[in-house]
Structures are given as structure tokens and as C-alpha cells.
Image (tube, rainbow, N blue to C red; front, side):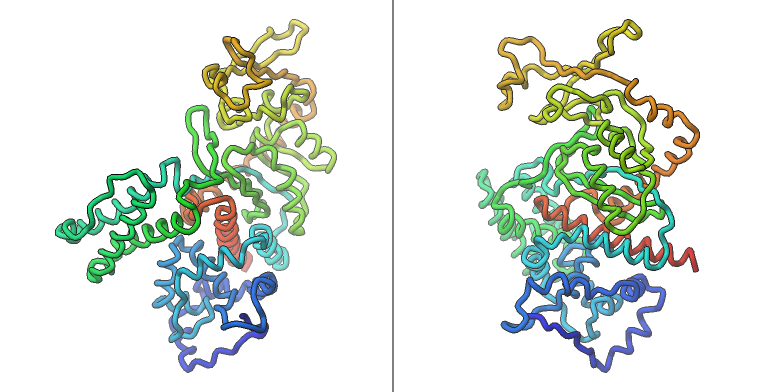
Length: 486
């Protein structure tokens, strides 16, 4: 049950915050910047308002998740820090003497309260609305790109992943006390995930009994990770690897297993739209949605900057129809129309190759037809015929007995003369220089906020992580912009 009325904190110790949390403290500034009651309005229908025991205020639970994203902490560590960090307690609207929550309640809050809320769009809208209200946004330009996030479970089997995490804990313990080897249980010899889970649980129990070791930060950090992983496998994953993660390609020679976040930022470096997808999705297909989501925040747009992935023919037409300037270099392999089986073969701009609907990438490419002989040139992509022979989608795609499998596209650069002329102009080159801003933003969310690896399993978990991370970086950026205009 939650109350619909705010409570007044009458603790005699509240004055401590004025001493230990200065006015320039980031968390104090965020608390003054954002009216978090919008969270309560969104989540009211997820709680009972007149029955049951009192729940932890949803605003406080949300703030715990925000602290996790700002400081890149685990559930256990963010709660632990809130016991003694007065800036945390102040931000959480707690009295200095108040008890903290049980870390497990954060998992329940994510699962039960935040599902189907549309958190990602809601939080981006809120931050852009604050920036517009404070007149911090003057540009009419957005820059688009996609960033990769590796699955937490990578491509290892569940058993291998659990073994790795338990090994990390044991190594940390041995650096403190090698005699602990005798107290740990024997390693499991079976291939059953349940047996490995049981072993990990026994390791956790042994370490927790040795309080003098368990309290050492180097051990505690690894132990908390193992406990969360065990909980994920036992409660969420049903002993399987990440169910939604997919293989995507960074280049022709490198790939990743996980997710993509398609981003739009403005010239002020605020994220104005984001779409989280599985890793194999094509960047260019999400341009129109990113534009419309950015406009939905109330921002005016007249220019869109992106790389070659966004210069598809449909995007060029969309920009022209909506009177938008599209600053994205043409790629002849992407921009021509009338391709055969267009829905079955998608171009991966990072690798410079086509990928079939089974996820197999072409192994080489070649141009056919000579230039200036009256025929359009064609780019032909060659696939691994051995994979085609056993592919589940081979019917209608692979011809039995064929010695090669190819996919060809016609290069019709003449259809894009206007865009090509613009691309060669000084105006295009000058505007395109701003593209580094989105690459810098991608680097920030990965390096400072842990967005290079997924915190949770599944697409919903990735969307949750994206929502909280983007909310955190946007709030930090707004604080910086406010200082610049003072």
C-alpha cells in the first residue's frame, strides 16, 4: 500500500544534512532540479492505495535505481552505501537514522512496478522538458548513432558463466587467506547447471561465515556479483543464457553478442530519443522513429546528422518530405531502391556487407559490369555455401546443387544527385563535424556508467538499464549547461 499524501520528516537530526551535504553536491542539485512526483503519478496503478502494509515509497525506490546508474553500483552496494553516505540518504529523502531497504526489494520493484510503464521514453521526455523550460536548448539539430552493449552472459554457457564468477570470488579470498581452500566444497564434476548453482551457493555460505574476510571490500564486491548472478539464474533465466541477446557485427571481422541502443542527441549533447533493440538490427531503419520521438519531446528539428547507415533511400525521401536536412554520406550499397528480397537481406554498414535473414554475413564482395558501358554497375555479395546447405531458411533461397550463393544490388547513384551535390558542399562538411558529439556520448555512457555490458538479462532489462542510464547522463548534462549560462 502507498499513501497518496507526502509525509513530513520530523527527525531532530535533519539539520545534519545542511552541514555534510553542500549546496554544490550533485545529488542535492538533482533533487532541487527534478520534481520526482511524476514517478508517483505513473506508478499509482501498480500499488494498492487502501489495503496491505505500507510499501517503501516508489519515489525512493526509483531514486535507488538512479543512484545505481549514476555511480555504476550493484543492488547490494548501492544499499550498503546508503547506510553511511549522507548525500545518498539526503537524496533518498531519508532521516539520518532511518534504516535502509533490503536489496532484494529493488529486483521486485523493477519486475513488478516498472514493467509496461514505458520508462525509457518517459524519462527522456522529462529531462528534455526540464531543459526546454530552462531555455537550455536552442539548436534544431539532432545527431543519430547506435551503440553496442554486450550481454551480461556473453556467449558462454550458463555453467561456464557461473564457474567464472565463483572463481573470481575464490581468487579474491585466497589473496587474503589461502587456508580457505580447505573450507570450500569440492567442485562439481557434472554438466548440470543446477549442480553449479548449488556449488556457488555453498561458496557464498562459506565466505559469509568468515565475517572478517567477507567484509573486505575486494572480496565483498566479487561476492555481491556472484550472489546477483545466482539469483538471476535461479529466478529469472530458468537456467538459460540471455534469451533476447543476438549477434551483431561491428566490422567484417568482429562481432558482439548483446543489444543495440539507437540514440539521438541534440547540439547541447542531451539525449532526445532512444530505442533499445537486439544486436542484429540495422541502424538506418530507426532514423524516422528517432526523429519523431525527438519531436515528441517538444524539440524543433530542421537538421539530422548521421553516418552512411542513415542514408537509405527511404530516409532521404522522408527527410525531403518533412523539410529536414539529412547530413549523412551516401553509400551506393545502401541507397539504391528496387532490391530483390529487400526484407531478407540487410546491409550492415559497420562490416560493409549484407546479412541474410538467418544472420549469416557475406564473406566477400565484387563489382560487376564496367563503368560507362550503358549498364548500371552491380555489387555482388558472396555467402558461405556450406552454411547455406544446412540453413533452416534455405527453401526458396538456396538452389540445391549450386556452387555459390550470391546477392546483387544495382548501384544507381544518378537517383541521388541532389544528395550527392549536397554531400560535396562546404555546408555539408561543416555540419558533419558535429557528429563527434554522439560518439563522445556513447563513450560516456559506457565508460562512466557501465553501459558496455548489460546489467540484466532480456530486452526488458536492457531497456530498464538504458532508461536509468540516459536519465542520469541527461540530468548531469543539464547541471553542466546551467553552470555555463550562469
